[in-house]
Every structure is written in C-alpha cells, then in structure tokens.
Image (cartoon, rainbow, N blue to C red; front, side, top):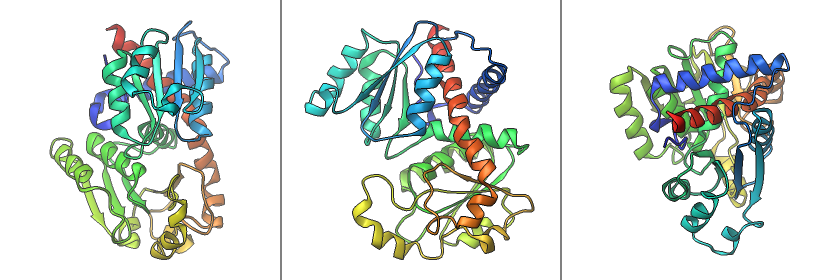
Length: 309
C-alpha cells in the first residue's frame, strides 16, 4: 500500500511518473475524454480546515475519473465529537476506496494510513502540502521550466509550503533558496531531511533571511500568505516582522529575465505580494490553481496503480 503523505516518501522517478500521468489525463480532459480510471470508486474527503482548491480539485477530479467523492467535515462525522482517528480509519476502510484528508496534524494522516488499509492522500497538514507542490511542478513544466535543474526562491514564512518545496528540491535535484524572517525559519528537522536527500540528488539548498539574495537570478519566485489558518490572532505581529518580504517589482527585477512567479492562493495583495506583480503573473498563478485538478487526478490514479501492482 502506497500513500501520498509527503514528497519525502516518494522517489524522483515516482514524482515524475505522477506528473506524466497528470499530463496525460489533462490532455484527455481538454479533449473532453474522461476515461474511467477510477470507475465506481469512492473517495472520502475529510476536512478539518476549509478549502477552495483542495475540495474542488478532488471532488471534480474523482468524478471525472469515474468515481464519487464524499465531503466529510469534522462537524459531520464523529471525529468532531472525539472518536479516535484509528476508529474512523477502520470504519472508512470498509466503506470507501481512498481517503484524502486536510488536517492540522501530520500525525493524524499517519494514523489514518496505518489503520485504514487504504491509500491516504495529504490534502494539507500543518507540516506539508504535497498536492499543491505537484500542481506547482506541473505548471512550471508546462511553462517550459526544467524542474530538475531550475533555481527557485521561496520568500516568506517557513510553513508547510516551505517544507514541501524543500522536499521537492531534495528529491528532484534543483536549487532552492529559502528566505524567511528571523524566527520564522523552516523547522530544523525538515531542513535536515532535505539536506540529507540532497547528498544523493545533487540538490543545492540554501537557507537564509535575505529575500533579495534568494531571488537574485532565480528562475522561479514563490511565496505564501504570512498568516495561515489558525494564526489570525498573530496577524499584526507577523505583518510587522515580515516587513521587507513583500515580493514587489523591485524584488522581481532581481530574478532572472522572464522569471515565473507562483502563489498557492489565497493571496493577500500588499502583504506577501504586491498588486502589480500578482496581476503581471496572474496567468501563471491561475494556471497553477487550475492544475490542482489535473495534478490531484494524477496522484489518485498513481495511488490506485500502486495498490494494484
């Protein structure tokens, strides 16, 4: 049984395989050819956190693949009343074919995977957001960027997106420069895993606190909100401490000519990105958002194939 909990659990070849599946399925979908790769299968979607892109991409994606998706918020199922995760996992394990969960704790995903005997997909946790990274990689590949040799600058909070970029770089072998304010760095344990992986992949990983240094000559610049879900009480403090980390025109001028800009959305103009840079790169950003649908279909089909091998 293979799960999709973090890119650290997946090899370079497997990441590229998922992307190829996604590209093939996207090509078919654009021609209105919806092949039933997951005919009559059921996906349970557990949401502790609200979502736009994750819910739509998995729900529509599963239906386009010939299956059905069940939306389960923690208010709708017994998890919200304190039922142990392992019990929920064992119940779902006898009723559906696959689980996607968008949760707070990464450990909850691991427990779902341990007790459900079904493929479990990480729709987001506080530690990682691997399905978003697959959409980002798919988008960059379509834009003509070599995703195995690119230079990427991540500017902002050391959060689940930072962690996922670290895993992606360390597996695929590209160069990643991470710039965060002091005190907001990516967790040391994640950086240590990435540096260890980089010894095999040849990835160049640079961790610092200077956004201009990170962006200098980068092929891709990416960022995320400074205030994630559950951090709203810290907004004023965070905005003050992230001063100088807004990706604006002056910042992007430091990047390589024709550099791409990505944002996983929702975007807060004037904070992590300026209005003019967001609109200048809107086609790239919304292609990235739309590719959540196709990338997530690739992940689900790959999980199903791994189960049946």
